[in-house]
Length: 316
Image 1 (cartoon, helix red, strand yellow):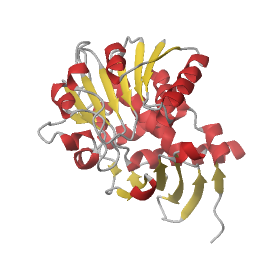
Image 2 (image 1 turned 60 degrees about the vertical axis):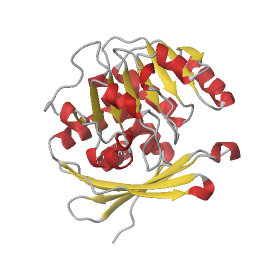
Image 3 (image 1 turned 60 degrees about the horizontal axis):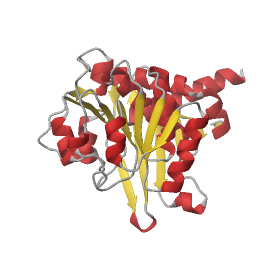
């Protein structure tokens, strides 16, 4: 068997922009809503001694020429060591033969941007059309990728952010301001909630940060930090108060998403069902909506296959 191509992070970054990622992930959710995505359970490995974790995800999406097996890590003390908190790689296989097709040494980039794109797809069907302020809880990679992808589907002018690490919050706000937004470093999570039209929670918290009483009519919440057992960012009452709770995958969110903390809450739909037109998203400007996103293997297959296709096309 001939050797397979190895694609490095710079090549992947050159072809997978936020706009490309949002389009690919929207198509992946549509496929899921149409019943064309086949997803096994996630493997979660907790490395408590190092405050780290590994996630292994895969999926077959009918109509996508490849299948990805993704290994992603998150080690949350790494920034203090001058290292990124997230890393990983993806192995791609031909969906028709099962033979290896490529190894993508993305260092977690494809996971990061597909997560940002999923947030944008959720906001596109669940947030009000007219917004001004985006609230961000966290100051890490997803605080950045969620904003980069959200601006593909919404226009906004102001970002209000909070992080428990004040130096990282200051750096994040400076970066956001340099991108042309009004940036405000909030003193509390409640202050962010009071200002946000769209609230993004992107932390590895294990205790609730957002209280139900802080949610406002018309607000949309994208909660993505609860992606493995034990994590939680929203008080369970938030889900009970929302008019619409949408999940990326029922089984995952029941096991380790925000939904795991509120077993009495019945989600309105999976996000793919809305994208595929099988049910509705937001129907009025005063609804409170929440997207519980845990990250699904079909997103990895979709973004990795698109990346390899574009890299191959670019080379030729």
